[in-house]
Image 1 (cartoon, rainbow, N blue to C red):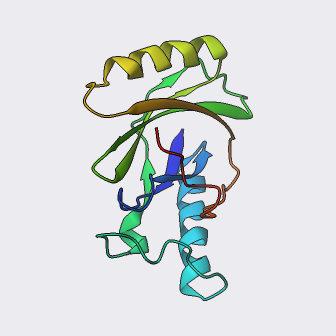
Image 2 (cartoon, helix red, strand yellow; image 1 turned 60 degrees about the vertical axis):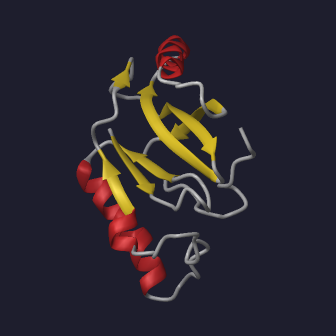
Length: 148
């Protein structure tokens, strides 16, 4: 699986998940469509102003292919994304730990992610069920997290 995400300044909001794709070609096409929607003026970028970060869509919209996957059937329509959020000094940082195809795998991945907590900052885990191949919104109202 390939994850499309937008890197944001941790002073503004956690990174945004833009979609999960089966093939790198699908992820590249989704990335191209996302970036071009702002370059050609069809949409106004809700994240064009960020704290301590100069926006560069070509660098900020990335494809990840190294996230561990657990118990995902080949014909799965959805996956569970295990993310942690750490908050400190006015920043919220998101780390994506795993993609899971079952509740049991998600619980195991959540337990493993908790082991990485260092205990110095408030931290939380989120399990998000995402439809494979569907572009997700980058709407500011939907992609800000409450304090952890």
